[in-house]
Length: 305
Length: 63
Image (cartoon, rainbow over all chains, first blue to last red):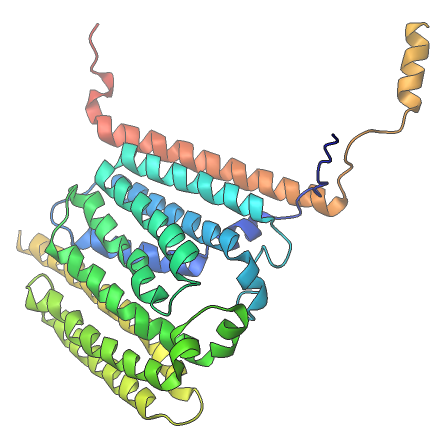
């Protein structure tokens, strides 16, 4: 019996390729929403502990990104949007990406547990596992509901931030979870409407590929009709001020108007591109307003004292 | 065979193993610097968290 070892060329990947594996844009959204969860939580967290928690959450998100790119390398290579990623480009081997992702995941979870608390660490572990096993390995290639269920992973960071600050969970971070959860389908389906060919070529059963444009537009509207009132709940529950309420109402109205326009659109993709772009602004506005609200509340109590 | 002749043979042998290209060497250097920076940042984080968690108790220990 002879054993022939496969000849592996020494890597030409630089640090930039590994940073790209961590999906920095997704990571920035994760860090931002986790920061809001951490800041709106009651009580005081030492800035060093807060920063450590955010660093761990960011690293965990990067780990999930790298593991996703490892598993999805075959379909990434077939899609225009993702063909330039480090693995399809040949800069990083799938094995290197998997090793990198698993190392980061282990480090981020253990560090968060030891330095902050184990509830936040367990939630980070669950988020990474959910994103990789439930979304990437199972649902993504199986059902058009992939991003609906898989969206839970992207919605968890504010709850992790809250858990890092308080060591527990409550209704407030759950509302933030629900806002991101119901925001995900309109956001991704708007994108998939004008990338449907790309998804079809890669064999990913996104809703426009399976059910067609018309049904996708209808479902985008349905989810937006749930999202817009849900966005005002932090104000209605009293943990965000009137400024937040006004922004949530106005931005929610714009989301509904854009979803209605998308529903009425017969040809072209102008409305879907607009909704996709505005959905990013919508989520940013809501979470930024929560942050501003909390900061200004903190400032006014300082001034009053 | 004397020690000198062994050394001569060693010197004449072509170099064994993988020879990295200029690009591979540059990439490895780049990765090494990134790992060093990440490690340094990790050490700083652990140090700061330790100080924050222990506070003044860092000097309190049974003698």
